[in-house]
Length: 380
Image (cartoon, rainbow, N blue to C red):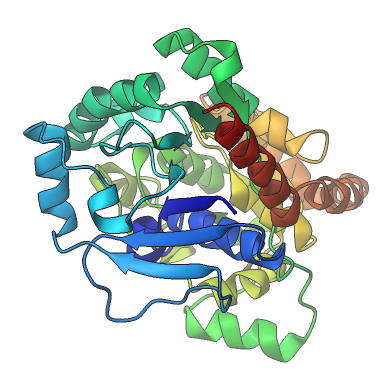
């Protein structure tokens, strides 16, 4: 039996994004059965944590806080091995960009979700960008193997960091089975009331930050509302506050749509299926994404999608979304208007969306990950 340690800190500290990715992947591993022995490592002792109810999953925590571990490992260069907290392991998997020091006998696996801080540096907070530019290339070089969320991210790793092709594998995310159409009007009304929303609305989901291209989306939406039959629509941007977001909120005022753009903040995972289902359209015009899971979740809930044609999004969306250049504001306006008014187009996008979302499952991701763990162990 292989003893595998997984850094589970993001699953505990981050409600969305990489936190969701890590939680879903670990739950899917547990569902495959007790083939290996897992240690889930969390920086700091958590007050509450949900771990798989399986005897082969155990929780460990560090006696050093996460900020101090970052200082010790990545700023001071102190090589305190992660095994001091996990105990001896065969494989250590870091699913959040950065690899800690390990013993020479431990095989290492690193997940890099995207290189947005390189491809779109102006959209990243300066301090975070400086940190990632320093530690991620070093982690990629040190890891025995690297997982990329998409072929686009894999290409970036090969092009920007010179990673050997045989060292980087694409591991697609999955769509949880909870994402399906919600048609109960009582449930839909309840989620709208909970977040102060009014229908009909166009929805976008993601942290409020420049890379999501929300400023252009707001301007395009303001133009869409000039169409008489679409004048009662609102735009809902669901996500926690991020960084460099002042211009996004200012754009609402400048575009004259203060009463028609709603920022409900972070939406609980349990409410997302109803939120997607309540929307008439899902808009995802991001400048860069390593994968773009909300796009697939919207499709799985039967909501037509307009998305950017940048980075990984064409790869993930396939032929099931209306794709536009994220810098073409007029094109985005036309796409939103078309997807809201053309019933035949909407029907085609919805049907294709169901098929596309069904291609991505966490079970498939976990099965592939087990194969990678096995190869790492045998190539030691």
